[in-house]
Amino acid sequence: MTKLQTLPAPEQEQGKGGKAPGNRTRGSGSRGKAGRPRESRGTLAFSRSARVKALAKHALLIITGGIMIYPLLWMVVSSLRPNDLIFREPGLWLNSLEMSNYTDGWSALSHPFGHYMLNSAIVVIGSILGNLISCSMAAYAFARLQFSGKKLFFGIMLLTIMLPFHVVIVPQYILFSQIGWVNTFWPLIVPKLLATDAFFVFLMVQFIRGIPKELDEAARIDGAGHPRIFLRVILPLMVPALATTTIFTFIWTWNDFFGALIYLTDPEMFTVPVALRAFVDSQSATSWGSLFAMSIVSLLPVFLVFLFGQRFLIKGIATTGIK
Image (cartoon, rainbow, N blue to C red; front, side, top):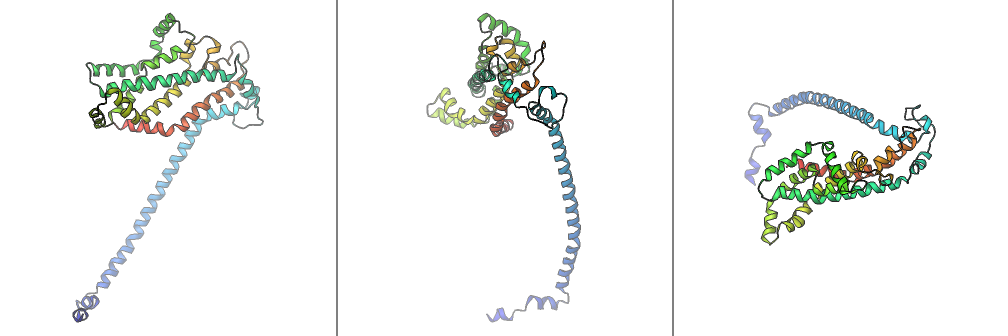
């Protein structure tokens, strides 16, 4: 305790040196204070420029989004206008609501519009099930199995992505006509059961390749074969890719007009896009209000599916793209 008490204080020792450390501290502090305004000015200038750039980007995105969504908003507004004012008032301002377009359009054709939505739902459900079953099995074969000509067949499968649908529509129509499937839903559903959508096969192949093979080996040690590995190990891990396939198949099949127009000739078998085409008559006046109203009704399922499945869609594309 006595030694500690006899030790000189730091201030006294620094004072004996003839220099004032406190002055050095004050000097450095003054330089620091002199430097701080420069840093703060630079930081403020940078933050202001960043804010201006962010505001400009957001303003550009809002303007671009408004331009892109304007036709949809105009169609919604036009569905609530009288038929004679739709093209006279191209703006978005409504002077009166005409809800009769929805009631008239629902029963304007030979069947209620719900009948055509049911036809589309049948085709969509069959197409989704076909793509999920066939494309997942084909993807597992390309990603996990080893067989001769695998790379060749995979390359041919990728080439079919670049093959337009209009190229094969004539031989397909001849084939289905000879079978007797014209004016039925089978030509729109059966090809999905044969893994003809190469995009989804490639999507699932990329996803399966990202799954560790150690899981397959562990299941094989337990005595599981390829069917059990596919059903118990791979398929439960493919939920994002399966969800992406479901959403894309729903949107593309629900909006398919060309295929349904080629194969469906009876008005009772019409799907939604072909039924909407029936509102446009070249020989008489077209009920544009009813057409726009039923177009809005037909867009609601697509909007709801995309709204609730958006996170699965983004997750499936993101996890597939980084493989």
